[in-house]
Image (tube, rainbow, N blue to C red; front, side, top):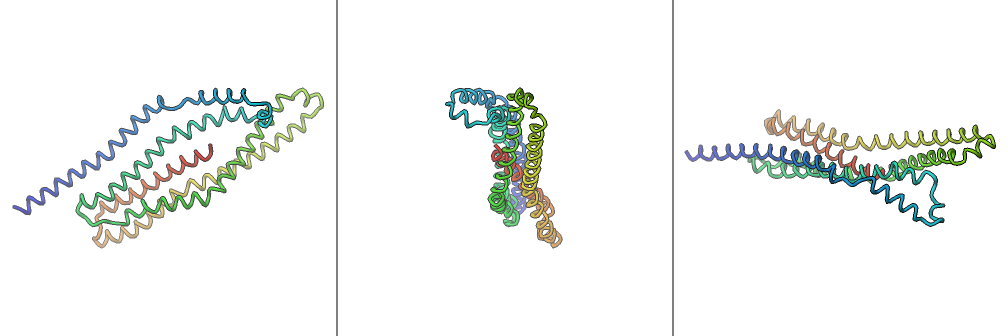
Length: 268
């Protein structure tokens, strides 16, 4: 009778653990849904930023205004202000969601051995601890190259916009002195330069974005071999094996989201 009572208690605890696991899945999802619904009201207005930028420009001194190119004000109001809002506040919720998923996974990996009465497996904790180190190292090593590529793209884009604005501002001079072919040829050079810089920056960003997926695939591949052998030797349950694989993939997705948000902030 005593053994049966103990078995019943363990069985009930496992049922409670399943309910807890479902709750840890549903509650964050519901909270994120509510936040997504409310963020449209909480989000800062890019129009306010644009108005303040123009107000600041109109109060510049003559020397300060002379240092600005014709396209600087246009680009900062039409492009940079919107990007700052989208990549700043709006991306913050995605960053919080990704970090929250990682914290929940860490909590699960710590408390699950006690709930299921199984020994602690450090193989499932390894990606949670290794991912930040590996991603941080990758960001540091690629940071300078990424910054150079983005700076070159923005500079050539600004040069192209400035060239167009100058064409509209001094059209009469261009027409009177018959400089249309030369001006168009110069503009074609700026367009070609922008296209080249955009291709380079797109290639750099595309390669950067593959870091987290590659790490996830490597961890999944290694655990598929190691964990698969343990399953075949009856040292690991099939359920734990499949759950750990899913956790590895979720870790990769979460770090991919975190890096994408940080990269968007760097672009701004």
